Figure (cartoon, rainbow, N blue to C red):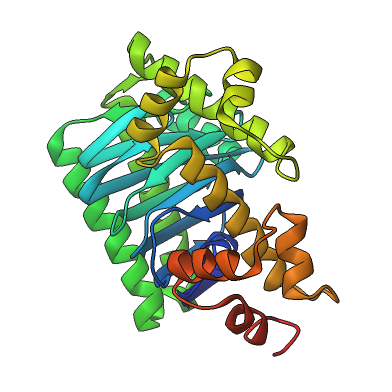
Length: 317
């Protein structure tokens, strides 16, 4: 049974997303300034534990690898976050299944402490313990277990990560690794069995999430085209006011600002990869036709010039 630990400091939203195994997701930086994040991850057999946070607001969207189930303690330290339409203030426990996509607006400084387990291993354990498969429904949920269950989970996950950080003997002995895996799996099952799941959203929240999701998909599908607000309203079937309210509530920015931010994130992602294209070519490909204005907007969002990003890219390394 493997026992692998990694600790990584990141300086880019895409880099942060790629630092966690078994997740297929894209991160977009939404707030302005240099990105500084940390990912601490431990993988033991069928179990993965990780902690992450960043100093910028990030939109995380994607899905968990097939046949896995995850729960995560998320704590918003400042502005609220959003998880699949649920507003997150303070601390919450969320459930994530490989059966559906998720979207999380992680506000600046949000602490994420997650546990992910192979679903078949969980089902086997559930049958052994309870005589039945007791896993959660395969939809994104906000879980509400008793406070002491949350405290115990937080302590267990933090302790598991510290084992990887300290390089203790637990990682070198099969018996210790097996007991650690069992403890983590039982903790996940306990959270699912001892709490209620809030999957249904109020009508207003569901509507806002739907507007934002459909808008983001349309923007991504037509990112190389000129998109005006009237075009977007017509394409997704909503009013300008509803569009504005939905983005300001969920993303904390206007739809026009998000469109520009999304394109800037795409430019940054391309600049960090090996490409023969010039900075100007990449910017123009994503709709930025005014070079000096593009450079100012890019630096305002990421805290560095486009040429600095290119100079630090994998091509230059």
